[in-house]
Length: 83
Image (cartoon, rainbow, N blue to C red; front, side, top):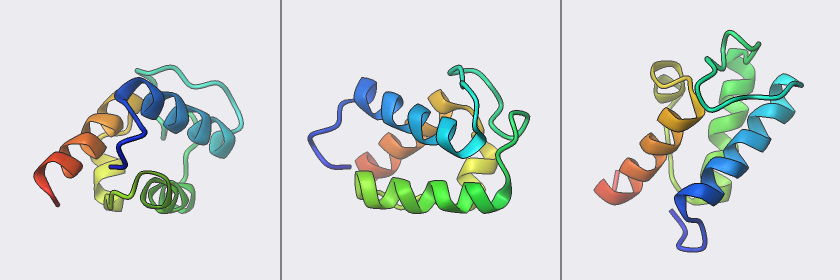
């Protein structure tokens, strides 16, 4: 994770990106797939996460943690563990 992003900023950016992908407002506790996130858009999201934050997450992570807060926690955890 690049140092210029704190958790609040990261949460904001991920929320904005997901909203762009699903075409509607997203709350932190919404299930992204219930809102219409497809597997293709999930793949786009993980590519965007890598490009934006410098952290690689797998598609499985998005499916297992389909809420903004859970996804941001996974991104932060990956960075801290060096995965």
